[in-house]
Image 1 (cartoon, rainbow, N blue to C red):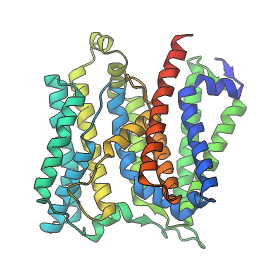
Image 2: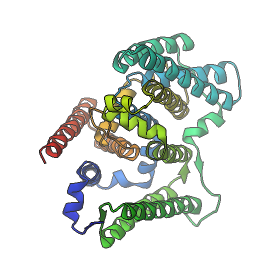
Image 3: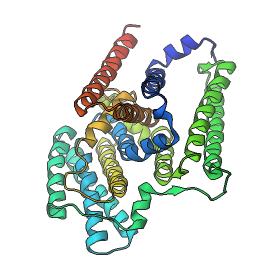
Length: 392
């Protein structure tokens, strides 16, 4: 085991991940200064969570798609179709709210299975399959909604995205329950980091020196609890943040601790080697697309719940935001590299930039220009980093 005692050396060895974090902190600092601190107001932080949760959910699935060496251009249309089906069942047919949720997720799963069949078993590239799916599912959305918007949803359905968990433990001016939940999360993170460090030492791998390791834990814990304090002083813990946290934990475990996760990385890293190693490539690819459909269904529920309605044109550009989040978060263009947590950070970078520019009153054209340049620079960084690693 070799201890890494120098911060510069630590950052250099983990350049792909550390660069994301440094960029995220810099963007927050920049927009905080430009908006005179409005970016970090408790109410605004809550709004960022509510407004971009559906993109973060899509980013989780998209990074797995990209790690497997594919791309999915249809997630926005699938989310719109899922929300449309839920709207028809709940608003037109008067079904209970949970029927709409299950139907929307079911639509996403069916769409994912449809695309997974063509990609995995017919051999059509995911780019073409999902491009066709984008048009197909958009057309179905118009048919389902009969070219009109439907609203409002029942109150229970609206609480999925617009509801909060607060007041359970009381609190003088702030919500104690929110602080307790985040404290438990920090404790879990610390325990997980200690276990990972102990395992790395057992396998004689490089780890950060103890002072740096402790410093990282303290810094992460302080930032998380500060964020919790802001939410606790606003409206409490958003329901949608609970859903997002569960998905992040589950998919982090799936990608790092399961056979399926390892096979996704193997296929994206070297398809030939994975095939020769006995990986069932077709079924893994089918699972990747199926999972993306499931998460698109979840995103459809979250988005339609937040907007309290379903529109035939909903979901436009969702796929581009999700793809951008994955690449900004460190996913490699050629597949085989990427992390769920990285995609979440990438999505938050997009969210903070968009929210910051909206607070500054920037025109839509300016927002597109800035986001386009950030995506281009993220991919350029990936290419440069790969050349740098190859030149060693």
